[in-house]
Length: 288
Image (cartoon, rainbow, N blue to C red; front, side):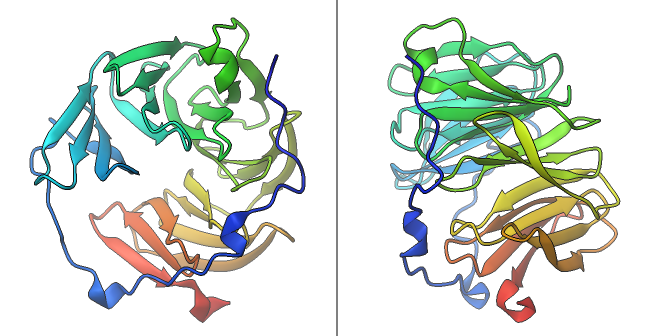
């Protein structure tokens, strides 16, 4: 049987948690992994077991130890093009999913050091992958203008039909896909200069956000779900209130692209990765 969809009223534990905001003045370089990849590094992700996972243009994902001077733990080979995205199963720490320039997405078992499944539904580059908090579902997005929701448990049990929903509506490629924490809401960032919110249960686009003048590279929710940040090719970063869909903030990081953004756990500090090689931090409390 397929896994049931998330409920409307699933509690978000981050709402009751108290997280201290990151202190920008205290930030410093703690460790540098030199020559970690042959070429550019596309994404990084912290693993719960004191490790860091990185993916790059060299067709490989790598897992590094944070407790033994950056020792390489495992290198995942098998993709035929650049690795564009990675995520870790929230309840099974040995499982990761990757996306690739050849359009394929792969499921990996770290404990067995092998790829267990390959998904070939996308017709063009797969740009990103993301697990739902339950671990029951994961999303992929592609240059083909589609995002897909897969049933992880059905895939693990060997079912042939594992794609539960296809999100259609963007008129150009989708650069990024992610979930709102502990909900059925999916967000996509597209080259058509829009951001869309979807109901993963039926594939319906519930809202489309307009205002970006360039390809939207990234879209991410704060853990508490009260803010959505989006970043585009022209260097614009916007904050939205997903409850009323109103734009709360519009800032420019300069003449270069805003490639990605991420909230700290408190939802108060927003980090922005910029095309000029800089990293900018914004305290969103000053703009609320």
